Amino acid sequence: MSLKTLDPELLERLVIQIKKWSLTLGFQKTGISDINLSQAELLLENWLKNNFQGDMDYMSKHGTKRSRPDELEPGTLRVISVRMDYFPAPSKEPWSVLNDASLGYVSRYALGRDYHKVIRKKLQRLASLIEGYEPELKYRVFVDSAPVLEKALAEKAGLGWIGKHSNLLSREAGSWFFLGEIYINLPLPIDNDVSSHCGKCTSCIDDCPTKAIVAPYQVDARRCISYLTIENKKSIPVEFRKPMGNRIYGCDDCQLVCPWNKFSEASSETDYSVRHSLDCENLLTLFQWDEETFLKNTEGSPIRRIGYSSWIRNIAVALGNSPYSSKVINTLNSKKNTLGEMVDEHISWAIEQQEMKSG
Image (tube, rainbow, N blue to C red; front, side, top):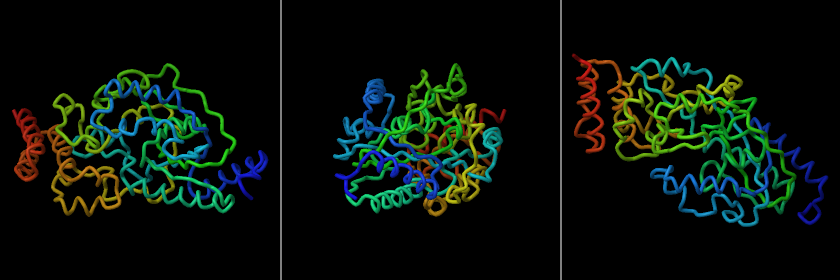
């Protein structure tokens, strides 16, 4: 079979086969979209004009390649989008961790193996299966690894709708899932998108600890705890340190309060299982990791990419927010003058917060 001989019936059959292969590989849902992202492009342009990207310069440096798939990968006609659920089971109930200031809260997506590696391998396998069916296939696999508007593409492919917190939502799965894409040169029939089901609900907006969701569907990354603890390599603004609480890597609050997540199910993917008790580990224990231990315990984890200094910076803030303890102060002091001025600033702030509670 060649591209020249493809007809609508063959294409329909191929889509059915792609979705069967996808399920077998461990993806929970797959959809096909065209590459017209003109509306999403306008939203992105406005978001950038407001400087909501913070220091994430990569969001603008590729120009229109992010919103025009055929510019990023010439010849692209369709995008295959996949959903893979990740909420780890078993794991400590999130609110019980957030409500215990002695523990460190790590975003649920980062408790196990780096999803980039897990999904890329499976997507590559899916692409190879399609290539076996159609030898003239040209494709490129993406997992949050290039200028791709993955949520807009997934929305067009019928995997869900973009909620007011800017995450993709599914009626049957909530939002605890990853996305991945394959850009292809086959004119496959496309799936229908789904309508929004957020209604009048504003839980995500109301409950954001730092009020980062400045309007429905608009997130100012500069206020977002996920950005502040992961993407941001500088000092965390003082105004956001107390609202951070014990969130040391990312933030899930907007997902935790979303009513649609009552329909989500725990992932069966063992790669997402909790490692090193990071679902509910004591802050003092985590702060006392030296760099070698940090690198060892985060091997194969998305946490490693923030680096040791940011890790200690984040935990220092959380310790400042924890109940008063002389042990906390002594432990904070033990890391002073070891990781540079930026980290020292946060350690000093944390000690000051502890001392204010001592009286």
